[in-house]
Image 1 (cartoon, rainbow, N blue to C red):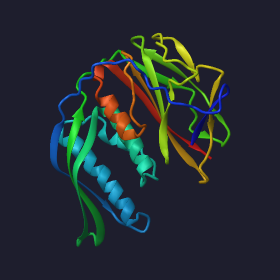
Image 2: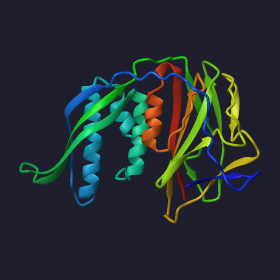
Image 3: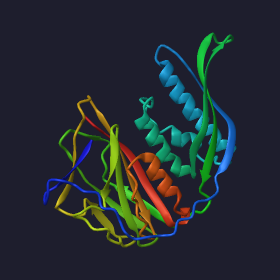
Length: 266
């Protein structure tokens, strides 16, 4: 996990913003019968094959909804250990890059024996609603630098951040295998308006550091997500990746931008 250490106090309380904003969600595209399949083998268990077939079905749903751009390159960023809910969160975050979020409304799982290849396949068929992002401000971007791929336990996480295009408000989320949290804004770093084109150091204050800790496993994966918005739009739900994605997709695409990555603690 990533532990946020606040030197001024021992407990970190999430700050729920009170500012209201009008949100506009685009009408989703309904897709039926999107199918994915994955071979079971000595290296791929039944569970892993089902999870990968599920991802393939989601890709097909995106294609059927007309979201074609870079579908494979985005899903290809999933690590080989993608047979977990945690890596599924990472894949869902990266779907944002191609402008479509898949909300599965029906899922059917089958095991099929292919006579020709003499192989067993997991086949997943889904119905889904795909939330497309048609509004884009191409001048609006969030640039995050200085993030390492691999950290040792006890390392302090830092990075630099720059918003391009317009002054913005920032939300910084992290997710590990046990859940997630909103790290910024917090009680010691207010919800400040970031000036466009100015480089900021994360964390913003010496009162806060982000220290890497594992949960007893040989390695721990951390998903990090930075979201910039042109208006100060509160996030007030429990921090799950589903809730974060729903919050993002309720914001018009030309009024938000995001940066997301996965790091490993060893």
